[in-house]
Image (cartoon, rainbow, N blue to C red; front, side, top):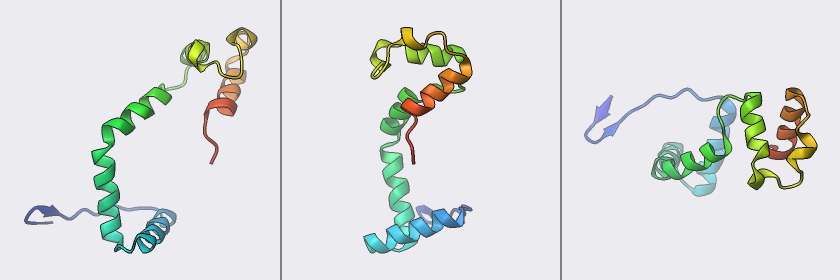
Length: 105
């Protein structure tokens, strides 16, 4: 359905996300529709910056080859030397990567 320059979309969201959106909307003193439109507009405006950051941190499907390549890059070796972990199995490398690079919620 559309009216003029606006189009109506229906999106199914988990209730936890709706609750969070409602909290944010109340805090920002907006209706939930305004808040969602605001979030989407900001995301779309910043999309290419966000996309670049995600692509720098995300190397797609995790394979042993890609994981070894990532961990062996000198700029990624912050608290370790690749020489110390080069003999790790894929499972050990994956656990190491999770422990050192994946953000914890």
